[in-house]
Length: 307
Image 1 (cartoon, one colour):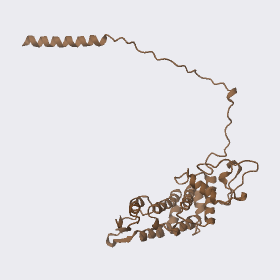
Image 2: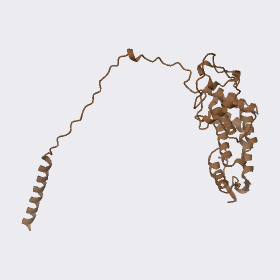
Image 3: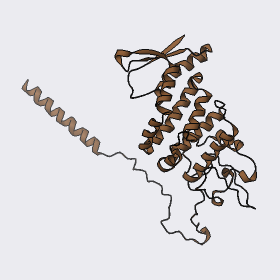
Image 4: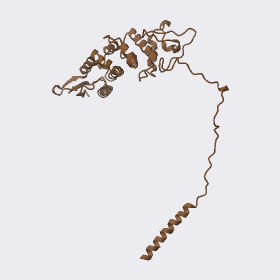
């Protein structure tokens, strides 16, 4: 197989705003590459305007959608006007971008991921994205940050150490402030947790909050990259296996009653053996059977007399 093509005839859906296209077209490319060692040439037949239908390479079509939508401040502004759902669409874009990275790696470059970081994390256009995410949907920002870190962990993106440290600090601050988002690439991802621990500096002044008791630390409202040290003389608990600091930790626990001084009132459960029904058969079925036989006999006799 030397080439594959995907047809589009509407602007309602793009190639990076859903998981269908990379599953179909990207899945074909991955399957062919697995067998032959080479990704086939990939094309898009565009019939959005029937009078100006065209054929372009997947790379050109993909890049055009990136620039016109997801790197476009006007598109981002429209998403910000939608609040929670708009923030979710920004996060989904990063997820679907990873789908293309996994199926057609040559399509997504290092620079693509760097621009995602610059635009959505560093706020390249100065649109107030951090405040927007914090007010509308902080878990979308946390998921997007986790996706960038997971992409780096899987050796598909190679940012500087400073960029990685800032991403980890933002992610952990978000977890502390809002709880873990628990999307599929963050919650329960032990490899990502270990990766983030290796990214952060090891100095005591920059120790990870994930290794300090939540009750001993307070989130900072002025900086998203502030870390806290555990109190002296107290051992840090084992690393959480599914999250840095999630819901419910650090909350006062209800006092447990002393079982030795409590009396429990209620009914006593006793084992009761079920009594079996009498084995003797009832005479009622035999009587009914006799009546039926008698009635049939009488009918037969009456019919015989007429004949």
